[in-house]
Amino acid sequence: MPTYPSLKGLYRITYCLTYLASQPIHLICVDERSKNLFVLARYDEEIEIEIGPNGKAF
Image 1 (cartoon, helix red, strand yellow):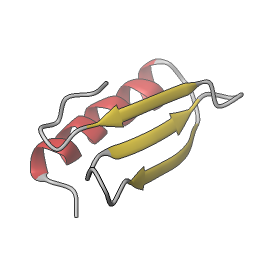
Image 2 (spheres, one colour):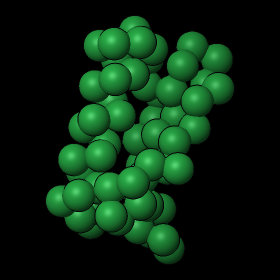
Image 3 (cartoon, helix red, strand yellow):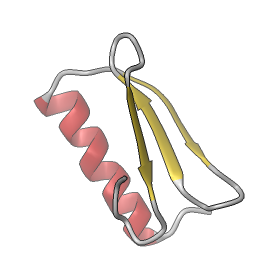
């Protein structure tokens, strides 16, 4: 289960990708081992973002 800070970070990232950069998001999932959120975006799936439990993207 994602933490509250990681969900806030996910919202911020997805808002920037879809509304500001007009990029599609193909996949959002949770890595069960590390509890990081993973986002795969852009038309050719070039953007890969991981969001840690503390809400920081890397």
